Length: 172
Image (tube, rainbow, N blue to C red):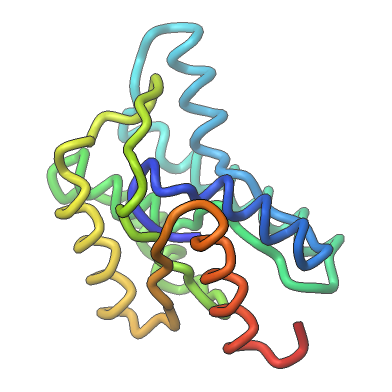
């Protein structure tokens, strides 16, 4: 799953994993940063980025080693890279940048901003959704990553994602 905050990545990852009788990888940053917020009322810092990247890759590798079917990732390092550049004035940790541009996935489902934004402790860009979506789209295009824009709400969004996956992979 790929895209701005509050576009349904977690919901869709869970639904697709269930539908395809597979597994999904949660977003490490969400749990890590929520814990930081709950304990210290602090937001993400530059120093958190390598920890988040390592945690995300550890989760993905662990889930991939126990899975011989399609694996759905709630996020990836490219998402982390984009948010780093947005929040830290263009800065991205060099290791994060390296791994973000060199990790490859079979398909990115770019989730549109056509569903309502929902506030929580970590989300803070309700008025920048258009700009963020363009950042995500630009990143996929510049790295020539296979992607499909997923639109719609509820069951329609879910069915669009299923169709996108089935159109790309004949074995699912």
